[in-house]
Length: 205
View (cartoon, rainbow, N blue to C red):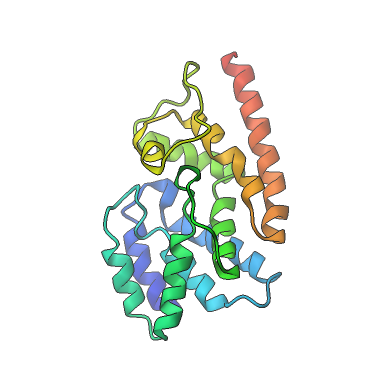
């Protein structure tokens, strides 16, 4: 079942830019497995499927949940478990700080695993890959990072890539929900801070 599902989602993610392609899914999957080893009570199948499907209906790329729902509907499992997967996916997104509460250990694992891929060296690379795909500036010295915004405001304003660090990425370390996620986030967060300091040195404050 997992191999079949992987083949199906691969073709979907190949349509996205490099920040949300299938390699992103593979890295999140790897992060989730690392966290799962420290959370033996979690349902590994729910976590793994939610990871594979969590960006199929990403609002950055589509307004429809049709593909996600079809893939979940086709899963050979109980409706209760399918709903658990839907809930995990819904609770992943940051939404400009307006995220839903992660109500299960499975949702917490998927969220942490995804957010780990948004920080550190790979997070830096993904930020500029997405910014390039959307035609965003690398940085804007006159732009101020927003500390509070609605989901609509978060998604609609075309801020520079560097501003995105201050509006989201630097906050993720403190939003990790599992002990392993918190541990893994520390080094990645420090690397981002070093990168931003070096960037400021090069472009001038």
